[in-house]
Length: 354
View 1 (tube, rainbow, N blue to C red):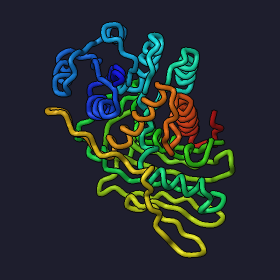
View 2 (view 1 turned 90 degrees about the vertical axis):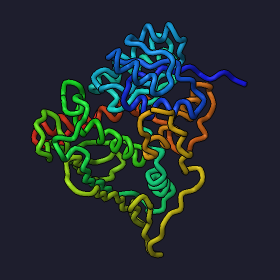
View 3 (view 1 turned 30 degrees about the vertical axis):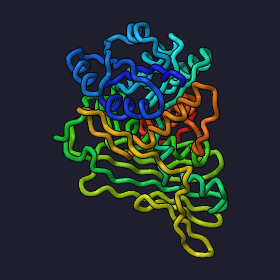
View 4 (view 1 turned 180 degrees about the horizontal axis):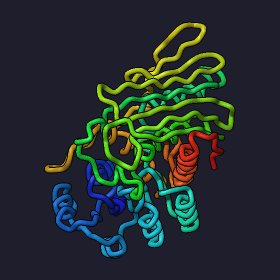
């Protein structure tokens, strides 16, 4: 039997809640946990059955012989931690938003490619069955040539200013703001479906009654290099139940997501598309005793991401019907986010991406 691949997780929040169980479910051994606060670090390591913990990544890699580092820390720390892991020859999974900006993102990609390590950005939601099926409908020509995409979303995540959230979430200097937290996933998803962005017109703003210097909402219009026009609006500061409208209209039909199901309408009528076995998520792994709550919305896709990580490290095809998100995708997402921020600073001026 092949020995499990040793992995380090950097970050005691999402890293413990999602990275740790997903890595364990896919053949990795979590040999250490890295964080900043010794008391909190020791507690989280014990809760998650991790034998060793460290406050220094260099020390952690040297002491454990880790071959993989997954990074789930505030965005402002991603570049330094990633470059440090790569310098030790480790394969890396970095959370999103990938970097502070595209300049950092380019440095991370260049370092990974020069070192020859396997690299992934944590855009695990590519594996959500409804999103993967939506993309497959477009790729297989069920709506003809795509022409117009709308993605609007109301989310109550931070509508109440008293909702406890990590401080960095609304601190610009730390890479906070909803555009990076939520928007980065959607920018990546649009690219996976439709290719590269040409230009954007965007505004970033606060909807909730929260005192912060970073946005909880954004709106934008965009144009893709293939000519698709679209608009996107998302707020995490809306009271009430979540509401979502995702539709893509093409020359022959329209595809949309409704309550987790995917529908196509064309001349022949409207039909629901079935989720095929290759797009189904694995069952959630059992939670470690004392470990923090897992959401299958997160753990299922992240497990698929870790399966692709394992295959990539071993030099095997991923076998995934979903394109594996690499640092190159992370850089592309940062170029879109940079363009949106630049556009917002200029009152929504049309701004070229990249």
